[in-house]
Image 1 (cartoon, rainbow, N blue to C red):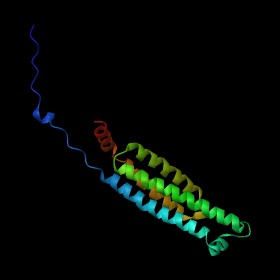
Image 2 (cartoon, rainbow, N blue to C red):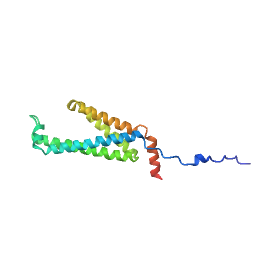
Image 3 (cartoon, helix red, strand yellow):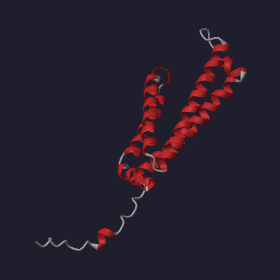
Image 4 (tube, rainbow, N blue to C red):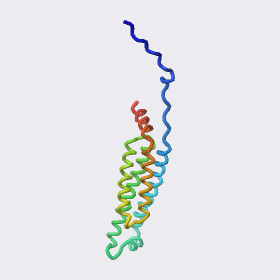
Length: 159
C-alpha cells in the first residue's frame, strides 16, 4: 500500500517569524512608572531631609503629635515612599526588558499604592487621586496588548 503524498512544505512558512516590536503602550507605561518613581524617590528623600530639620519638625508637630513622634513619622513615611518608589522603578526596568513576572508584580505594587492613596484621600485631598490615576494608567498601559510580546521574549530566553 502506498503512503499518501505529503505536499512540499511552504518555503514561506519555514522562515522564522520576525520578532514583535516592543508595544508602544508598554513603553509609555514604563516611562510613566519611571517618572512617577523618580518623583516618589525625590518626595521620600524630602521627607527624610525634613525629619532632620528642626523647623520642619516644629511645623509638622502639633498639640496631638510631639516633636519626637513627628520626626519618627517623617522618617517612616519618607523611608516607605523611597523604598516603594525604588521597587517600582526596578520592576519597570525588568518589564521593559520583557519579564512578564515583573509586569504582574508592578501591577500588585501599583494596586497597593492605589488602595493606600484612596484611603488617604480625606487627609491628602485630590493629590492622592492624581497619584492613584497615574498608577492605574501606567499599569493598564503596560498590561494592555503586551501578552504576545512577553510570550515571545520568554521563548527567546529559553532557547
